[in-house]
Image (cartoon, rainbow, N blue to C red; front, side, top):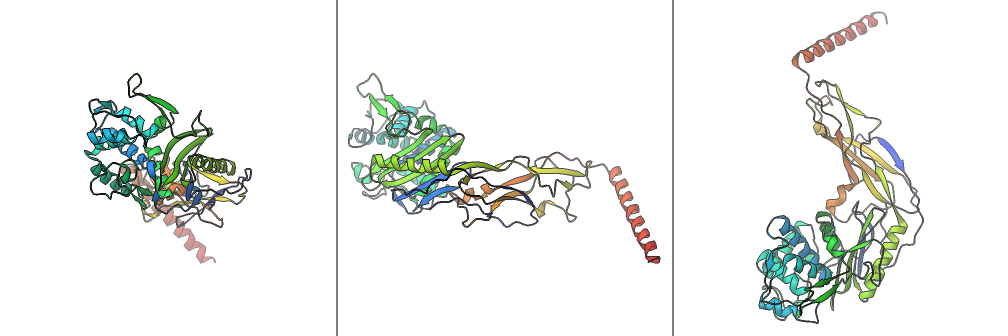
Length: 443
């Protein structure tokens, strides 16, 4: 299903219409994607541009290694691992790494490997033995790492996800060494939405992951008997069969149950898209179908800045601060709102401002002192279209609004100035009441 309209997700009060925008780029036909599940997301806004069967839990294969990548990077960030830290592998990991029916680099028990070497083998070549070695380095055992994977999935809001190992292999392919407590025939499962959500966190929290993911080929243990040229399984990278301009990630997956799957990301002219296709026909089809999604995304949508940073509501440029040295303070948006705008969509986007009642006093003003950058309300975009906007997940729904903040500090006036203002207000009020009374005598 195509997604392209925007409607406010928040009840708005005391709203003022600020501006409308309409953009009409070239039209494009909504695609038909030959996959059991597929999704296309605009990374800037988190808005779904295309979706089909995105909440069914399906085998995810090696795309689940994105969670291992995420947790390795988190462990390094926390100081629990380092890229140059040396690891040794267990007999079980060494044996599994020698299975040439699986994606692997050859590992030995009498040799040490750096975390970085293992990570590159996992991210570029989808090496399964290396992945398990990293899982054991992070959590002590793969079973403990699987628990961590599932805990993190819950933390990230992945509601249709269950991990049984760190690699995405079917447990039956692990030569009897599958993690303790998991079924011997079990396999990792995720929905397309959850897979995209995981990829979103991978890219936004650890963007350096793409620096490894976009390497077309890299030697492993060059100059030794264990040398292998690790050709990236992502065939949309430069120099590969399905090269597509701007593709720089992210992870393929393939098992007999999962079929051929791919989580990809592409950036062109400052616009980044994120895609997932699951259970495509074969390894070529996963890239062909991804290309269809990308062509659709770039041909159908243009990025529009609906709200500018520093934008003001013409009906309320300032808020009064009676107790301040300056008796009013300017307010404006703290940041911008950028959204993808569908081709042929000539309807208007509205910007509506709300002032938060709980930041004002009973007189509807601010009390000094006031710090610059204090949130006093929100600017929210809305659209009167036929469909509500859908975001990748609930946490991204607030992307359609930005804070309205004070633009400068306002210090509190001293007691003498406040007293004089009070006296002035008293006599001003008295004079007003007197003139009203006298006027009444002659009416």
